[in-house]
Amino acid sequence: MKQLKTTIKSTLALTVLAASICQAQSAAQTDTVSVETLRRVGTVDEHFQSYNVEMLEVTGGKFWKPYAAIKNPSVTEKADSGSTPSGMDPSLYAYRAPLDLTNPRLRHLAAALAPAYVRASGTWANNTYFAESETPPSAPPTGFNGVLSQQQWKGLIEFSNAVDAPIVTSFATGPGVRNDKGVWSPEQAQHFLTYTQSLGGHIAAAEFMNEPTVAAMGGAPAGYDASAYGKDFKVFHTFMRKAAPKILILGPGSVGESDGAWGVGYGGLSIIATADLLKAAGPGVDAFSYHHYGAVSQRCAPMAQTTEQAALSEEWLTRTDQTLSFYQKQRDTFEPGKPMWLTEVADAACGGNPWAATFRDTFRYIDQLGRLAKQGVQVVAHNTLVASDYGLLDENTFAPKPNYWGALLWSKFMGSTVLDSGIENRAGLHTYAQCMKGTPGGVVVLAINTDVKNSQTIDLSQASQRYTLASTSDLASKNVALNGKELSLGANDELPQLSGAQTAAGNVKLEPTTITFLTLPKANNKACL
Image (cartoon, rainbow, N blue to C red):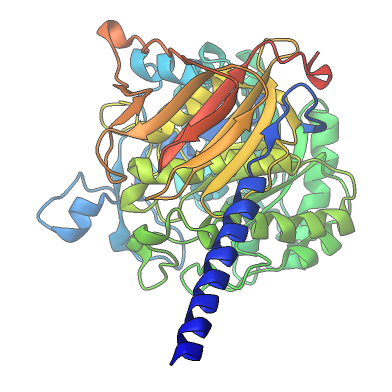
């Protein structure tokens, strides 16, 4: 018995020792962030944080039906003869009137995110007819599913100019723009470009087609394959270099592929491999574009690929890396050295999950920006600014959702030079660093605590101003506080003052489920001078 007690005591002692070692190792992971010497790892486009206004929002038509209407069929919206993507369930869609791009609140809140790109594209753009006169046709011509009037496109141009967001777009590529041999013809594109230029519109970049990997969903001709895409892209490339040589050509704009074990289904439609598209098209893009959805939303069940409970998990957050890894390899093989643009991304395809409008998704939103900037992605265009659950703003009132407040802080503080924070991401704590916007020598450290129970600690070499986003109640809340004060619009939709809290050098405690921007304007980091 005495020997047994001695063994138990020894075992307990070893357990305590092991725990102490683990704690020491954990503490070692929170070494001082020496902001003065953080090294530069790259730069991003000044329009890095961008957003989508779907072409369908400009024209009006059938977009993703609100969850309330799905659950309760008695909740109905205006009927419309607009089309829905091929292979998808038409009952998932409801009519949306054209977005009021003149709304003062919308423009005010969008301008606060400048500079950005506004991407007017999406699945519906592939088959949208651009009216050739001021009086648009009452119905789409043969081969098209929608009509974009000159006044509607003028409205998008005026919005773009007003909020300092140059346009990124794509062109009609369906049956209506093909010659007698079935090859893409540029007449519609030429008229579209000429009209845009006549109004002083600035198209910064353009993809040929939205998501050619799922071309059938976008209304491509029957039997469309990589070979057909290759022929089309070569015609498009020649046309663009002559008609609009200053517009960056993006491509291919793929979606649905990843290095991860998970996968996103698109209504059972087959995927045309990006490798096959690029082999057929040959080189020619100025930047390699792709899309990322780590899941499809609950609208598209049983294809749903994630849960609300997993929204802060490492498995979920790293799906961004797995998609990027796949497309970086395609870039390196077929378009080596070209910059990467993520031109469409949200929490989930099919309009976003219900929790996309809550603080829970803000962790995905901000963490995604941090990790993509660190890996060299130049532009990230969130889908969408307004429409459906994944919009940054409420589609009815244009009121900010939690992700908007995160976007506002990112826009205010994060510069174009990306630094290595010196701390490896781990479960519960993700850290990123960039030069401080508009402040030579300044540094911003972004610290995200995804742990729902435990606080985290980082050690800063200098005093900082602290800006911590937290829910006013729980992760399911749509209300967010900054340093304990709830964020809301003021009179005449004035944005609240973003006030920091002075934080001394040394240990900085990060409460559970918080997102913290730590600004150090006097860091004197040489990479930021």
